[in-house]
Length: 280
Image (tube, rainbow, N blue to C red; front, top):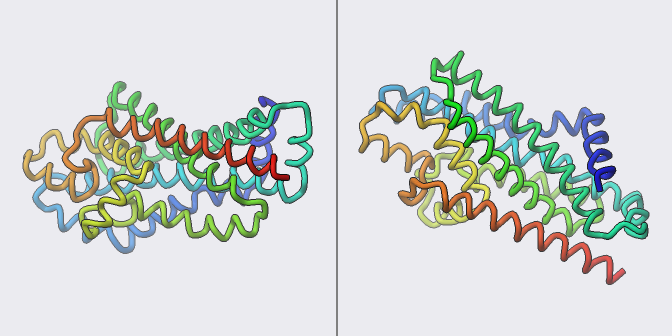
């Protein structure tokens, strides 16, 4: 399994197009903010002392979340390419158990996405401190951000792995992921503030597993900004921007959602692969 993980990492980072493609979702988010949403959002938050800093932190939290999801698309496609070239079949008839082979693909996807997400986190923190004149995260905040990012990446990797388990051709998978990538941005409230969506759509967004991780990332990045804001105004803005969902301020429920949904996605994906292989 370790050899498969190393193979996945090596092949991904040798493919420049795949590496660049992992940042496309994050780039779309930044473009939307700079050219379309930025000024209007800042203007609508005039009740706050530092509205631009809040919006910058909200935007960068979305960039981190989108990066964690979009980076899995390029890495998980290795499994589809191996299926198409019959390398995957060679692995499956080897003495290694099918579960270990699939976990090798999964953990290579997870590690690739985690590395890219950590790079984006460092860039986001530098941006907030240097350009937005914000404060550095405290050590406990950064530790929590690291843990939440790991869980979010794990959840997004499990979700993409689940989706990939249904495909055998890279062209079909690429077509589907071209839709899934932007859809995740909307379903997690990264492209449009959650509070501006219809109530029914808000419920869909709220119960989409990856939203829980991105909401926690938003909460961590904006915690210092809201510390000096009026409490009622801060609550209203947090609900509008999706920094809290349904008035929840704790971290236990979002983390539980991430962990449980990750296990479900990964479990179903492993079951689906075994089911397909038995039929063949």
